[in-house]
Length: 227
Picture 1 (cartoon, rainbow, N blue to C red):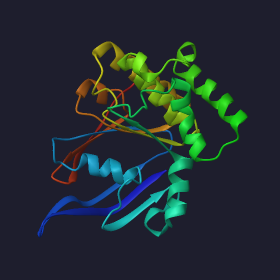
Picture 2 (cartoon, helix red, strand yellow; picture 1 turned 135 degrees about the vertical axis):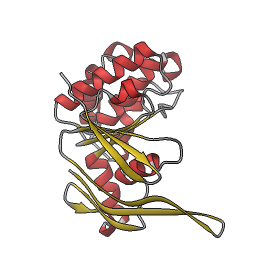
Picture 3 (cartoon, rainbow, N blue to C red; picture 1 turned 90 degrees about the vertical axis):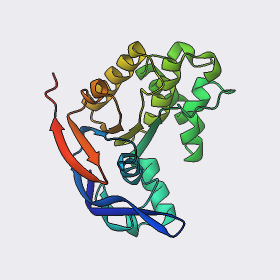
Picture 4 (cartoon, rainbow, N blue to C red; picture 1 turned 180 degrees about the horizontal axis):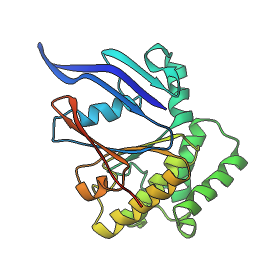
């Protein structure tokens, strides 16, 4: 599903080059749940952004579902993201003045999905995350845990192969964090590939593999024995 081969990325502070990723190679299988951990500045967020096609590598090769990302046109890349990827962020990224169902519907509006199909998918996605009864509530009137579940519904509404999650529990208390991670496990069991950045060991424990990133490289990989 996800195949990185000798991927490198360098940013520049003025004239000073700052290597962020150094010849990273990584293969993530379909339906795998992978967590990425590392200290601030280690390169984990850049790695996640490249996997999510939000940033591009300077060198190396990235294949997403067999397609070379670097060789895709802008239109093809947008179609790849829309077809294969769903995104979840620490800050939820919901529009506060519109309803939960409208927030979930937005990716399908951009994809020009038929209105009736949109309605059915929204209801199904909200049902999966247990928020059918909050469909008409604005996100401003939902708790943090409920807002993150709306964000998860939005991420899965187009039925992507891969869920990209950047610190998805970072703004939640322990109870809501556990609810979100159980939902992630359910989605993973249904066949979704999940790639998640987290700084919390207990959250990383829900994944099948944990990639430890340090100084722009994968320093080690831990396998978890999940029930």
